[in-house]
Image (cartoon, rainbow, N blue to C red; front, side, top):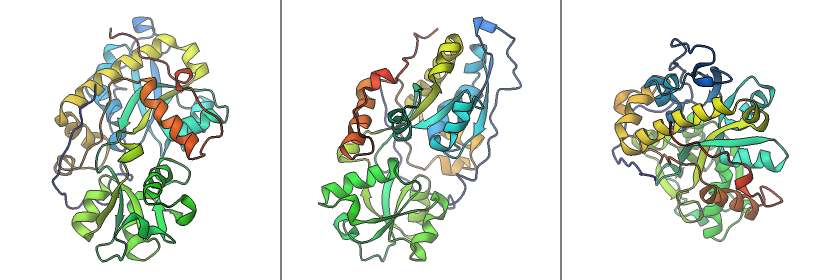
Length: 329
């Protein structure tokens, strides 16, 4: 079950804080005893991005849910799921946050990874195409021939934009993409480096309030309405080697997801512990949705869209990629 949490207020001064944020939450001080609860491995390193997608990991750390399972989790800050893939494959990370687009594209290339828990789902006004307030661009069709800033090429950013282009009768070949880190997108639009930008929170809120930017389109509509965004992943080999540890991780994350999906205060409390978002800002950003269960039906939508837009060349049955969570212990 999913409960979408919404907030419409506008914040000041959010701008560059998020991706520069540090990682402070860890339950490493509550060392699990070796073999606690029969786990094959009691301390694991988990890659996480200091953005709202990672909140379930930090709630589980902060509220002791991993500790209750006999598990010590050490969060490791990563820049993105695709960038973390070499660390996951080498064993430097035991698990990592994974954008579903990156994850399934990696699977299509033969990478042996498994999706083991949900992290986030798109919600209204959490992934918008933004333009300056005085921009002549009034509709998505006006983007023809223009440059659109995205944080990463060939990922959820370009896929989400392309679904909106399709509605406007355009294709990816009708626009130019430019990679720009989220904190720099405001400057990119102000200096003319790009004509429009695909933004996430808190940058949507901050550029609206401080620079007067306006929304051109909400990319979490149409084909990407309620779109699965990210989840937690491990390698197939790791899952086979540490099944009890994996189950403990899944149970703790599921408990945290249940918390944040039913009480917005859980998000507001956790965000300042692992990002530089202050409590006031955390209370006004538009949050993602947080599904509590990883299901093939939902994720198949991602795989099918990737095939339709030629991000992958062969169909993927996501049932073969998912390891369902065990029953709550």
